[in-house]
Image 1 (spheres, helix red, strand yellow):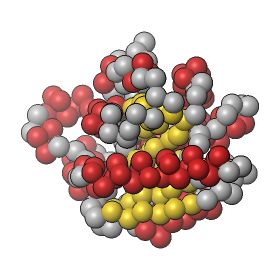
Image 2 (cartoon, helix red, strand yellow):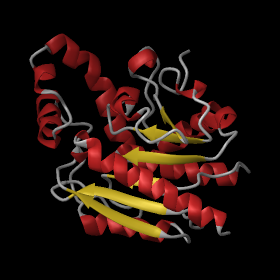
Image 3 (cartoon, helix red, strand yellow):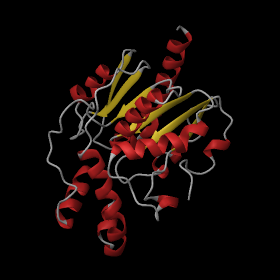
Image 4 (cartoon, helix red, strand yellow):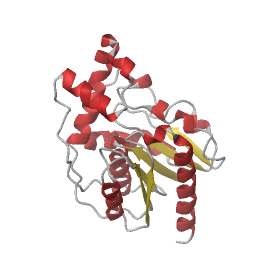
Amino acid sequence: MAGWISGDALADDAPTRLFCFAHAGGGGGFFRPWRGALGEDTAVCPVVLPGREGRVREAPFTRIGPLVDALVDGLGPHLDRPFAFFGHSLGSIVAFELAKRLRETGHAGPGCLIASGRRAPQLPNRRRDVHALPSGDFVAEMLGLGGTPPELVRQPELLEFFLPVLRADFELNETYRPAPAAPLDCPVFGFTGDADPLADPDEVAAWARVTSGSFGLRVFRGDHFYLRDSTGVLAAVRADLRRARRLLAQK
């Protein structure tokens, strides 16, 4: 079985680890360009879920509870230094639920959580569920979000290979209902694009309610995948990690 962390990120001896969780269908490659871009004090550790990259032979999860249980076991040995979470879209709720589960199981929690491109967990979905749609309709939904390369659609065999993972991730997202729990106590930062059809600024601002700590909102120019123009995003991540460190030092 392949590891949960992409590449050799864990070999980086930076004093802080930033565990990054991708969108539906995404893997560690989405965050690979970030490595080395956040300064010498932060190691970017892209998390690879079953069903993609080196884990293509593993069945993807379709429910958040079992996934988070597996993540606690898989990432637990690597939480031996200060760490933070960054999640984009589906990755935001995975990171959030993992932070909650770590607290429940007696582990130290993240120094901060950056939730990107997803409405706050307590808000209802305002779009129809798509994970069970016929293939043609499902693919059209994916193309509409901008995260699926058009060339993938032109390669039927490759598309057929990736569809089960995409469907599983959408099922995981669309069946997710947060269980009642005490708020986190770490800083939480919300990121979104100003033209994101899935998470408008008000919906992302509602992440403030998941923590008793501080909250900050950043709105970037772009759609659901505004991160592709990552220069401003990386600067914001660096700034918010520094802010979280200052806040923790004041406790």
